[in-house]
Length: 216
Figure 1: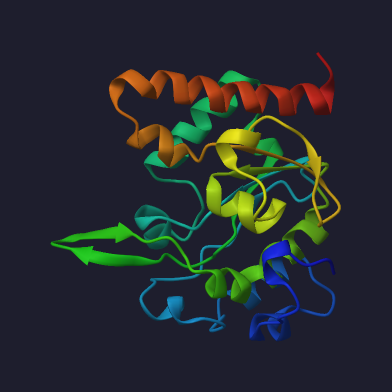
Figure 2 (figure 1 turned 180 degrees about the horizontal axis):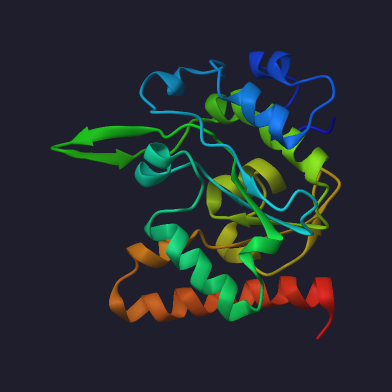
């Protein structure tokens, strides 16, 4: 199994939970009991990836959000709606893709009654790396799409940047053609003036993915 560039030579305890003969079902069941890093303590549940078993494109985000943590499914909250819209405009059926996150537990801090997203640390990404590596191995996508800075650094490497390298295709260390774009949550956070431009960027990058897979 190839490792995410951020994992270096370290092996987390999560690797011991990966089934010898992994399938998506077996991986999902095993990940439900993951205690490889402390994030599970404050999370409702593990949020594993979902989608077509042999998807040609895999969309990789940072981590589940509040809604995803409660429902146990990736990209079902406000950012998920933005992603669905961008995929539709780009001509990609979400049902034909596989959607997941680098980190499988929601990292947050309280602010009043709200749970505010916190960026995962490098060691938390390392602890979770065997799960995304196994998902890629099982699904065997032709193209990986990294959504946002955390996924870009974890999958493509720390020398890449989501804004600078968006829409460009490179061979990642995971042996897959990989590209980057903004995370849908960045579109949500943008002010009204910048939101349309950010959405155009995401849609444009996803159209490049569609063309790469299927031709003009």
